[in-house]
Image 1 (tube, one colour):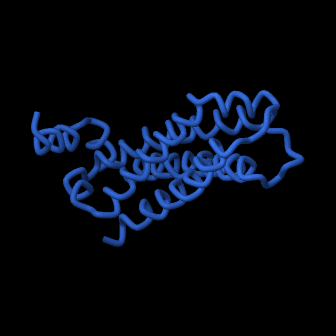
Image 2 (image 1 turned 120 degrees about the horizontal axis):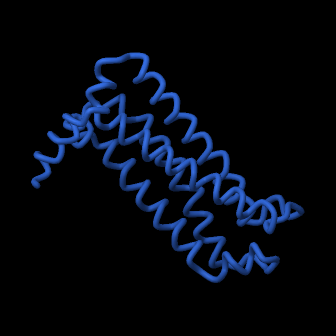
Length: 159
């Protein structure tokens, strides 16, 4: 299937068609997308700040796994609702520089998060060990990438 055929298939997807027909449904999915982004950002920012050394009196053992799971749920919901919103006008989005930047940033953020969780430094830190530079560098990347993805997402409507 070519890229153009995929875009056409997505445009014909029943969810996209339903969202185009119903302003209320579109409003609800858009609100769910914003809520998911809030959950993601609300979990990842304090976690990244803690990994960078802020809030040192806050237990990473207690909050780390919880915030990490909350961010993962937020990301999963944001991707799901984002795809639904994308299906409304896929041909317009695939040529939008801000949308393409957002997708690239989401990919970088997701790969960064997976690499952190696959490494031993994360397990050691949430088990009471020290927070090493192997966590601090990805935390700084995360603290840059996720807000940049949020800004790129907001930018989509202005291009």
